[in-house]
Image (cartoon, rainbow, N blue to C red; front, top):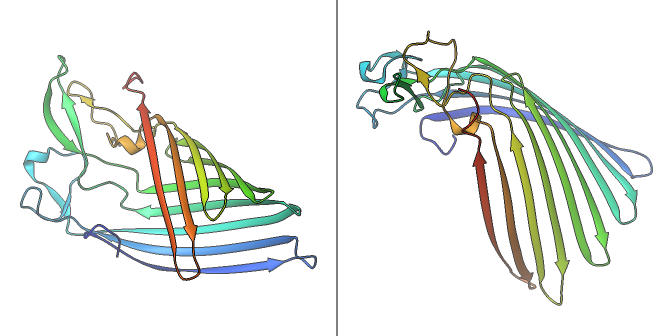
Length: 251
């Protein structure tokens, strides 16, 4: 069961790993499948059940008591020793999901010609999603320190494309370590993302105002520190993240 009470998940995965004779190359393959049973509590408006998509919230229309989403994932990975102090990791993930993808709590505003909200509709997303992820990481030892440089490319058939750059440097000092961290993320918007809908326009096939589907970029800076004794270890981390949306994108 996930952290949200109205999402229940079940599934499993199979993993295979194969080393080369010289132990410098490792291939891995992982296959997984899951089933999500999605429902909605009555705490918001005293009416339980999945809202009918792209309908007026005030009408309290429900399409079902529960929806289902099935997912299949496959990951192929390569770990290669490039040098005694350098390791490279590459993985390619392909994921497909069928079923209910909307968020039963998310709303989108309908505005008039003056930009004033006149009503709220429940969102609607496609019932199929295909995702591809390419991830690569270089790990390099510098004396006793460790440098990690990662890059992640993501795309899906909802027109979302994203890039992630991640940099960590772990400095091992006398009895403890310091690890500064920098991460940059950039994402394009889903093709059906809208900040609002105009009341004079025809209803679209799909629409969502979810900020997670919008165009934005963010960066994170942080610092970790810790030490290890024979029977225990201690660590602490502080991070700051800034996110910038692009509200000027045409609606």
